[in-house]
Length: 232
Image 1 (spheres, rainbow, N blue to C red):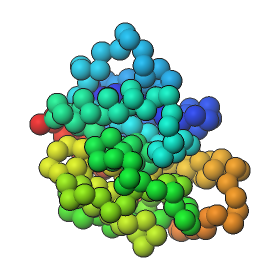
Image 2 (cartoon, one colour):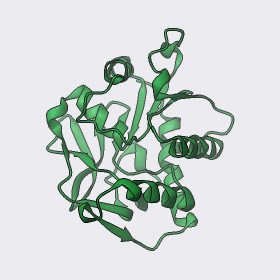
Image 3 (cartoon, helix red, strand yellow):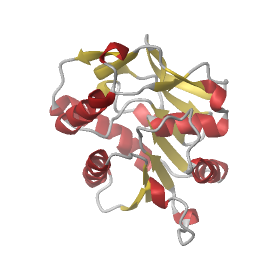
């Protein structure tokens, strides 16, 4: 495995926290694996050789998938290249949404009318990515969502207020998760604090479920399964 991690977070503190989370996850789920952490602003660099990577991980972001941003063309091209060549892709939150935007169109994304944030329990459908996970608790802090996906997207987890919490793109090694399995309790709480600092208090409901780092450790299995998957 040679992993490319695209960090799409714009806030410097959140971007650093995500990088530390990735370092921890790789050390646990794929010890010794080679990986590159790439900040989103560097995506357009001409010296980068994306063809050598077998796995792509696209992070969350404060940006909206519904907006036009200067990196959109490069990001869509990167995702398309990985999918068409049968390589492995995992999108988290914004990454999950941008995969849908790239492969199906922006019409399948929307702003959420009521945001529900916090540590939420999830049940996963049988799938290679979740074979050792089952029921878990995950951080959710999204303002946008994907919905009513075309049939080639298989929905793997749902909540009443967000029907597409996870999907697989056909039988390809391409997955999206609306939640954040990468964070432990302290880092996740910091993400919540940052999001709350600029959000309208009337626009969201905060859920404070019972959670600790031992429970969250189960989410490492998602990355273990992803890293073990070989390109098609």
